[in-house]
Length: 453
Image (cartoon, rainbow, N blue to C red; front, side, top):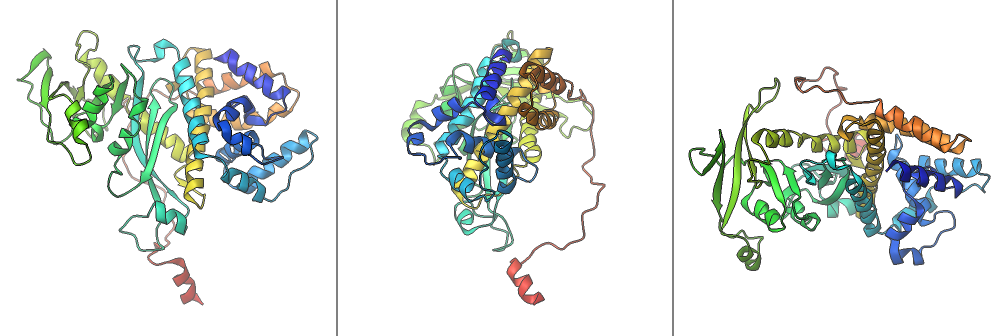
């Protein structure tokens, strides 16, 4: 991995590529474009340059197009090239022409390539573990966005923001995004489990899906098992366990049979008939003794039935690592500021969403390289520390510094920022900083202006 990164960086410098060319090569971008690059019109904003500037915009502090174009202008001047226009119109037009499928393909490629290259000891029992979780983000309040991703029904018109629901599949080994889906926040077939079903083609034989109890329905588990994958999920709150029944494997550890429920309305008769009449699952009760944890006792459900190869304590530790998906989403929404996207049309919003995931995957690749070079696990390296280090060292690529020296300094600095091992740390959910005493908006802004006039 390290050698490939150094070669890509050296090649990017020889070809006078932008900063991000070392992280995402022009050849990779053109392959993702496919036949679409043949109709691309642009002298300055080629497909690769448009993607690189878009990535820089996702990484910037204010996410503005003006700052992104200013960065390209400064880079061209430093290279002795003719300056590009400071206006953002050409860049926005080029960004609007980005095919959504291209952004999706780049997201998949950057995430899955690193997951495939990961050392085997980063995997759990040799399995590829898929950490699944859902969240939401808001976007610019425009008629186009409201039409496709309506705001919450409880909010008055003009007082809320369009909102989208997302489901993201992370690699537990390296933390990259392997697949993602987004849809409306409310309505039929808009739940997290419904969105995840659209991502089932990602599943391969012997994969392990790690998720919370929202995904613990019988049909969700059976469809995953139908593809040869396994699940490690917390048991749904409406289902009870009687450890006196079933095949006993150990203390509070047994295998039971779950009969097939009636066909749900969203499933076809052919799909329903293809599922087994009984689902064999293993239930393991876990006691949580750490201070600050709200739940003191829970049941983990899995289709990994072999108690010799998969001990109950190992399953409990694996389910605890499910929390990494929450931390990854926090990195996306808080560190990379993906909680509110600024584009004004749904097509651009979706591209902005996937571009944030690409940027996140590229950062995760650098984190994995730093972890690999120092012999630590990538989930013990700070994502925000890597972001801060990379943003400060990237401009140095324009200097005469040796690329090998730059790589060594970058990876060593990133690996130095380890996440503390604080399993027993807890904080009450209270705020010390008081918000400003402004009233909440209860009517459209234009009405406030009309009254003030």
